[in-house]
Amino acid sequence: MEIGVTGLNAKATIGPDVTVRLARRAEELGYRSWWAGEHVVLPSPRTPDSPMAPTDPVLDPLVHLAFVAAATSEIALGTAIVILPQRNPVVLAKQVASLDVLSGGRLRLGVGAGYLAPEMTAVGVPMRGRGERTDEYIDAMRSLWYDPAPVFRGRYTAFADVDAHPRPAHPIPVVIGGHSPAAFRRAVTRGDGWFGNGDTPEDLERHLTGLARAAREHERGPAAPLEITWMQLRPTSQEQIIRYRELGVDHLVFYPLPIEDPDDVERFLERSRTDFDRALR
Image (cartoon, rainbow, N blue to C red; front, side, top):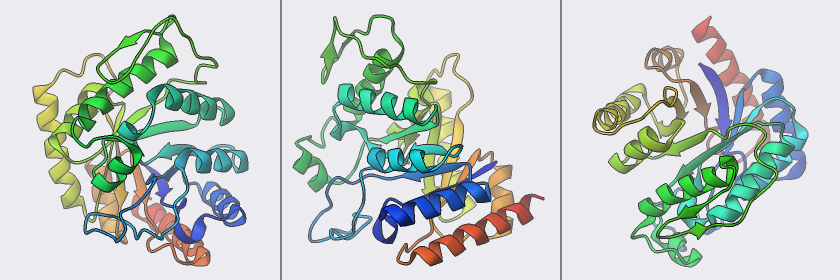
């Protein structure tokens, strides 16, 4: 099990000097992945389902990760997550391939279908059909990345007689975020990994049950076993860390809430690394 961090493209950690300082410190401490979330806009006034206030700053994840890539050399870079139906898949495929090349093959693309209706509306994408769009867009991007002559004909996107280079520096792991039956089905059928979040190992166990059900109902094919990434939303005890390993978590990602002071975030990174090492020694 590896350790990662997320959320630091928002709030008090968005500045360039702070980003470089924390990214290099995380890499120095042995964090293996750095993840960035996405919200293009947020409901104003804030709604109960919104994770942030409308005035909370959050950087575009790909722009942020490009900056982190330039400041680091080894840590994996992940989106957690890109709201895929809100993106043009042809443009996003180019952006992802470009970032993967510039980072030396360190990118992991976490995607989800989204859930905030005001955000979807502002971008011009209806909530209805967003799951089908997500499935289509994953397939379309993979055609652009890997097919000798990319062709795709779907309901929401289509192309032929085009090509896009450079191709990614390595096969892009597509990590599916979400806790719905549709997200579990998408992870099993189209994902290289699954990204979930919660407070406790018991939360994870419930979601793993959903993934197992989806695996029984849908064909995965010859793909490698699904990698499990879990974002812990609250302080984590050493006993919980051990339990996450027992449950098969591949990447345990910490979220240093409330992200109001960069010095507090750095201390959180140091403390979490120590707890992780003590739990698994």
